[in-house]
Each structure stands twice: as C-alpha cells, then as structure tokens.
Amino acid sequence: MARTIAIFLAALAGCYGLNWFLAEFIEVVYVDYLNLIGIAIILAVSLNVVNGLTGQFSLGHAGFMAVGAFVASPISIWLTYGEFESGPLAHASLLHFGLALLACGVGAALVGVVVGAPALRLKGDYLAIATLGFGEITRIMLQSQDILGGPTGLKRIPKMPQLPGTAGWDGGTSTFWIFLVVAVLVILTVRLQRSTFGRALIAIRENELAAETMGIRSSRMKVMAFVYGAFFAGIAGALFAHYQHSVRPDDFTAVRSIGVVVMLVLGGLGSVTGAITGAVFVTLLPIMLRPVEESLASSGTPITGLSMIVYALLLIAFMIFRPQGIFGQRELSLKLLRSWVPSAVRGKGGKP
Image (cartoon, rainbow, N blue to C red; front, side, top):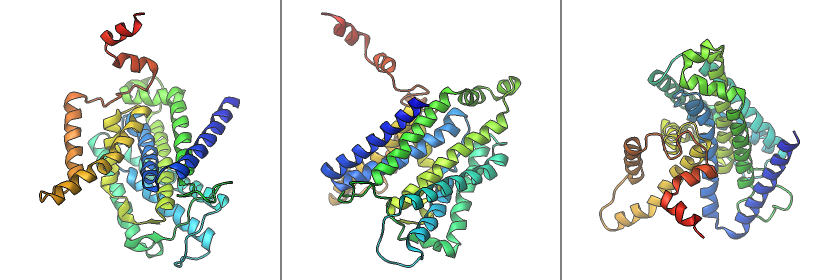
C-alpha cells in the first residue's frame, strides 16, 4: 500500500513538473502534439487489455470514447456555467471535473457491459463487425439528439481545472491531467498483467477451451476486460472534449477505432510498451508527413491522403517482415535492449 501511494505521488509530481516545463519552455503547438499523444496512449493501452491480453478483436473503442465525451461534457458545462448558452470559456472546478470524469467512465463501462455481454459470445471477424456496428450506431444516435447539439455537437466545454501556481501557464493544465490518467492507466494495466486476473486473460487468449477446463470462466473474464477498456476509453473521450472545448459525433468515426487497432498492431499486441510506442508513432506520422504534403502541393504534384497511403504501406511491411509488431508481447527492459545489440558490438564493449 505504501509503495502504491509513493508511486502515485511520484506520478503527480512528475506530471506537474512536465506541465511546468512545457508551459515555460516549449511552444504551444508542440504541447498540443504531446497532449494528443497522451490521449492516444490512453486509448491504445486500454484497448490492449481487450485485443492484446484477452485476444479479442474489438473495433468499437471510438463508440466508448463518444459515450464518455457526451456524458462528461454536458455535466461539466451545466455544473460550471449553469446553462448551455454561448460565452467565454472558464475553468471547471476540481470537484465538477472529477464528477464528470467519474460519470463518463461509469457510463462507458455500463455501455461496455450491455454491449460486451452478448457481443463477446462472438469471435474473430464476427466480433469485429459487431463492435464496429456499435460504434457507428452510437455516432448516428448522438447526431440525432438535439439536446446534445445534434450533428454540430457541444461547444464551450470548460477548461480543465487549474492547480496551485498554474495561473500564468500557457496552455493551462491539460498536460497534467492527461498524463496523470496515462500514468494511472499504465500502472494499473502493468499490475493487472502480473496479477492472477491478467494471467487468466492470457490463458483465454492462448487457448480458451483449455482455460475453461482449468476452471476459468472465460465469458465473465472477457466482459470484465471489455468493461476495463471501455471505462478508460470513456475517460479518454472526456479528456479529448475538455481539451478541444468542443466535441462532435463525427469526431468518433470508425476511422478512429481502426487507428487505435493500428497502434496496437504496429507496437505489438499484448505489450503495454508496444501500445505506447504505436500510439506515439501513429499520432506523429500525419504531423511529420504534413510538410511533405505541403511541399508536393506547392510543386504542382499534390498527393491527397499521403498519411493513409503510408499507413497502408507500413502495415503491409510489418505484416510481411514483423507480424508480431515492434515489441511483440514483450515489455521494454534492459534484457530486451541487450538482445537488440549485435553480439559483435557487445563483445567490443566488454573489452578493456
């Protein structure tokens, strides 16, 4: 217990220090990239529990993200402003923001139970189609709800709460809150992997029939993993909405769900380190290719959708040359790093 508290306090201090450093020394545009990476990491690590540890194939993460965004946003708007009218942005209080996050996580988890209980009786492609359908149904239903803004969504979503000493920070405290959730999620997921529950999920992934023979209730375990992923996907949606200060149903299309799966495939299914690496890479790829697209357009040979073309080529290359992803099912460690160093280099390093 004491160790857990110490890790949590260290995460708090680290996130506060990171936010201070970025506000003082880094341009806002680069801070924006980092915050989007943080939200992508939350999505990838939470989906990794379902697709990586449990061996299921879910394409509905954008739906849970949408549920979280459209549960937290009206709660936060109403508690902060008392109305849904236009006006200047304000910071949400810590209590109101905490209530909104809790409500969106619980709401997404409940939807995860409702969807997961019947859907997880399916396997493989059938489960992927069912969860993809759930995501699209959620988006279309949100578009038809006038109380939630209809197709245009909600605007004037409050800023994330301020902290002591953060009044003059450029970009506010978004980095602190986003990466605090990242730290909590990574710590919980690593502990889950090493727990009895995590090993039961891995057993289901490797051989579901053998796991049931050993007394593991696979249906119940899969639903619990699904709920875990949905809970944090909902929180990612709430953070996204509060960071953008507006949210639309079309922010959560099937493309976003597929993008999260691409993160896992590139990084390695079943690896937290791989999920983080894939999230960073996939988020930065369009940003890195943007100057290339602009230069091609200025030279008279525009290539629209260059990032999607590169996505496809990368996926094909990985499927051919490294189908297990960058890390496979392994985690980053000194032993793994040593295995990547050629033996000749290790031999030279060991000589006096």
